Length: 261
Image 1 (spheres, rainbow, N blue to C red):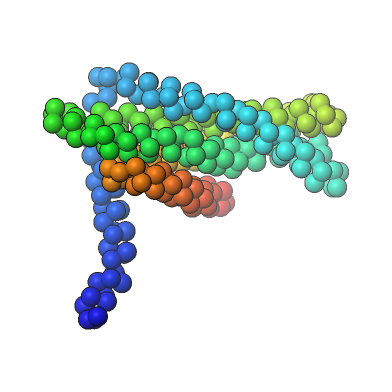
Image 2: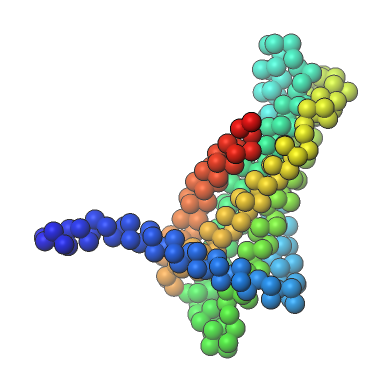
């Protein structure tokens, strides 16, 4: 094997990675540029909001309830050692609004809705539906991808808010109703310790970024998949893996920026 061929094989993965980033950036720019056209047909986004957001509500609600219950139980055991069990409400609220709400919602969304979007777009490509749209002078990015992108970007923050609210309720059920923490202290500590801008708004901003990232990754993987069932299946798997890693990386970066002071 010549040195040229060896270097070519060595650099092929890096070249493919850089090309993928370039194609992704171009697709995102095209999608954003065509998005104003959706103002004339808002029903396209509303339909996808129902499909993406409403169908994810059950798993988000149940997960939020049980996460809040577990957080309340573990938090009480820890705080009770130091005689600070009255701060249980504050611990539950901060844990959910800052971290657990946005992150767990995003992970659940990637597994529930992200894979569905990738499979849907991939199968549409395999069935030549996207090619048929292009032949009829219909841009598939504007007609198919853009409505789903905005629906996902809107859904995740709303679902994260539901997750956090239900989680606080779960923590209250365990802490106050089951264990016996003072009801007034639970809510007063939460009210006095949770800052609207620093905690709630920053947590909401995290979920917005997560929603944009997950939805775009899911759509791009489906759109760039080869039109075969095997590659669509691999694209679905890549969606979960890439989205999960992206969520953790973005969470670390945003936490460092938001709460460093």
